[in-house]
Amino acid sequence: MKSEMKHFIYIFFVFLTLTTQSQEIALVKYSGGGDWYANPTSLPNLISFCNNNIGTKINPKPATIELSSSALFLYPFIHITGHGNILFSDVEIQNLRKYLLGGGFLHIDDNYGLDEYIRREMKRVFPEMDFVEISKDHVIFKEPYSFPNGLPKIHEHDNKPPQAFGLFKDGRLICLYTYETDLGDGWEDAEVHNNPKDVREKALRMGANIINYAFNH
Image (cartoon, rainbow, N blue to C red; front, side):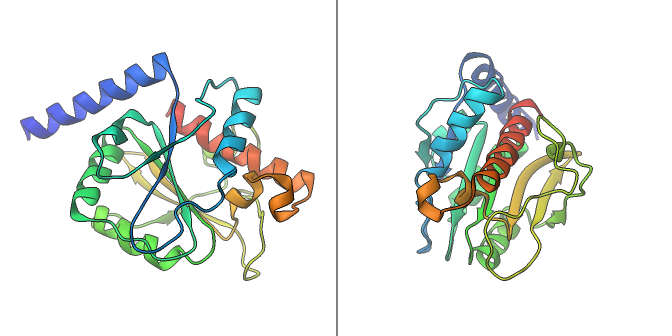
């Protein structure tokens, strides 16, 4: 117990130092065959939007991180996306669990086809937790941009409503899973998916809310 507490205190001070000196986010590179590298322009565009509109000072170039790396704890926000299978090793499961319990934040954006695999793997990370749908009155939908109807619909796949699911620890949202919205497609360069400007704006604003929550909660 004492060693675990010391580890969490260490992680806390890593995040505290990071938030007072610089801001970094990272894309997770995972195994299993899924395309972790999908939407290559999405995070850079989201970073640019946040830096220009909500006062962040995020490094314009997002990092790429493997969950087994000790460098994971240098990033207060990490992002997973893709279309196919995803598989965590035992070391990655242990590291991700420590990261999230220690103050980190994970955003998973289903790019279509990720659902069954990410649910399976996150259950391995947190056997005691289940994803719960996040209510529309959660703060993540309120600031800095208002989304009174909850998660916006960005890209159509199966004619299903967008849903936001979360894992919570002591009231804090530690993992956000956005499903049937495809925010990452809306963050990409305009010509990639030809989304209308207002749709891309909704996606970027929702992304800014997620970044804001991760950095301030």
